[in-house]
Length: 179
Length: 159
Image 1 (cartoon, rainbow over the protein chains, first blue to last red):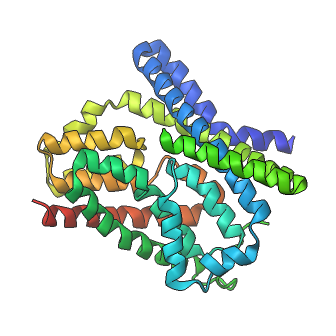
Image 2 (tube, rainbow over the protein chains, first blue to last red; image 1 turned 180 degrees about the vertical axis):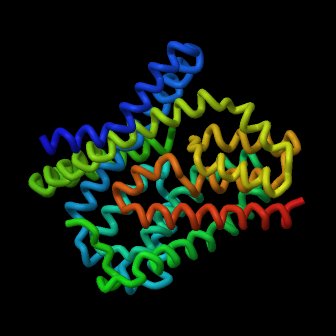
Image 3 (tube, rainbow over the protein chains, first blue to last red; image 1 turned 30 degrees about the vertical axis):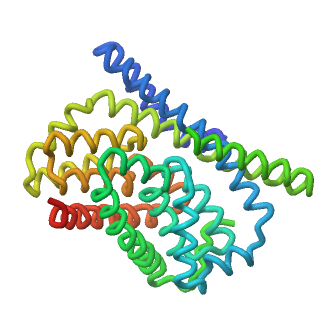
């Protein structure tokens, strides 16, 4: 019964959306059809990106020793850790939500919280494939200035989020919410 | 598309390599992968449905229409729209390009692009499922504030 309720809660948002789509269908079938079409194309994008990323997350979990993650992006990795976090994320492909499981896996292996936030920020804003596209459509000046200004912003965000979340906590630098 | 192919090739190659070296570890890796995927799926289905609904209800022309006014209030509104919506890069950048070409202000477009990329109100449930609500709130709130600052600075720097 409890498992059943947990499942129901997990699918609550989806259920509400489906109900809204169905309701909309009676009032304005065109908008509803467009909504379903949009959702299906996002679904295709998600199903295209998530499986290989999940496999990589699984392999990371099984093969990469905790010490390696700790040494490179852990609490004492300093500026080098920040650089590695950014470089690793810029090589990534896929929407931001695909970065969540990766950052989560890194945190569980001893990644510093600030570095995980920086990793997510870089994943969201400055991926190399995305940057090439940006240059094509908005030009070099716009793309490079955005990059130059975004970079310090995501680094500061990383340290600030770490500061805020760890204020008053006695767990120290480790961010081990689960396990 | 190319990057997607590279991603698949990489995952497959590493998986085969892992299987040849250690079958048990590979099985564990796949279990973790599947668990992670099935954990994220229900939330993502909801988010994707909501996104499709929103984009259908608010057409692209309506978003473009917001860019006429370059006053602080208009820019704040544009940033809010960017923070809530989620667009794939292949839609977002052509849109930004056409907005700039149509004479929209640099600050407005930069604010929109930066919030679009950095802040995810719709994906917040998925983010919170992994990292907790406080993490999600602060990362997005700070991202929003910085996006406004970035947009303002770009408006000053670029003609």
